[in-house]
Length: 76
Image 1 (cartoon, rainbow, N blue to C red):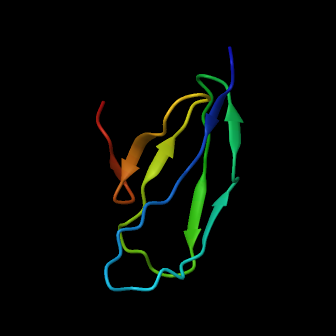
Image 2 (cartoon, one colour):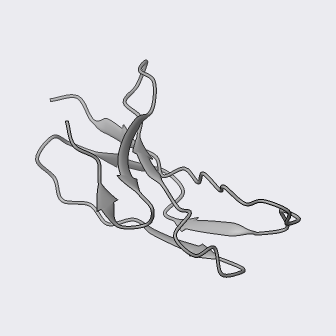
């Protein structure tokens, strides 16, 4: 089976604020095979409240939303 590339991306919806927030994802890129369990962590330099979204991007495909508002699972 071909490995799947997983990539967590940040989407911040901040109004009337400067965007000086530094994000650290560990690991920054992870290759995994279908069926593997993986763990990614993400830390922000400031409180971003609930405005963190996670996406999965497979090679050659557009990113797919997995989790929105920090911990809500996207359906479908």
